[in-house]
Image (cartoon, rainbow, N blue to C red; front, side):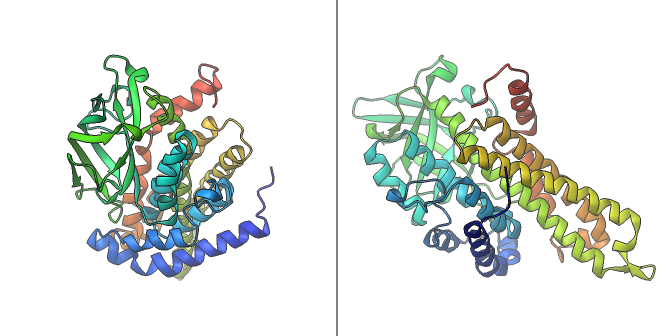
Length: 385
């Protein structure tokens, strides 16, 4: 594996970096302060093809693969972690899953809008009492002959109250556990019986919309079943192996943001007559951050390479996600130490880095779950898909 970027990949990197610096960076502090989701950024991402990774050009895909996708997402998330959700929520979540399991009619109806940014996407798995235990969910979908009737609630859904199109996982055969779940495509703008409640009291990720979704006799057309009856658990696990790449890339990018900020500050801040970067303890912290940051980035590249070559990637994806999470949290903690008292001030981004880093320890599989996935595959207790 040679991870030296090709000329085309360098062009992707430059485009994404320029986009993030021009369209996202000027609004970071304002949007953080106001907890504001800037919808037009998603549209601009779609116009540039930044939502179409690893999807067919006939539906609006950009003709490039996972490696190019993580390269672009890395540059975007490094500027503002909240915007990494756009690619997972639109491309690697609903669009990619519909492309894999959907009918031709479903693909034609939903994928193009998700990739060109005219639709906001989401996927709803987690419930208030069921997070890691996907098979234990309680939301139900009952076959009423000419439609499905859905009741229940979902919690901590990224993009939920802003979403136009989303995937919903629900129980279609009670008592069957993982074998009784199904996946549905939800048109949130035209489905009665759905209440969407923004979750505003969060530790971090303030400009990224998060929601509770309540389904009360929500009527969903029969043709919106995705991938077959009671196939939802398998579809969900397949989807998570893709969307977790967004988490892994975003975490690695946040680690890099902490490192770059700390290096700059260590060269500017003078103590005892010299830049603090000249002091050995600061150097040790910078070295520590760099080691974890580089490891996280290359684990992301490795997982993307496996996916582009159609090789088993579940273990590599979990390793990338867990490594990125650990690197981001550790780097955010060290950055706050390096910045000293200023790190505790909103004048600098250390507080945002730390708040945003902590979400990676639970999002799309807790760190404990990913350790279990990695170990079970290594021990031969589970296949590496």
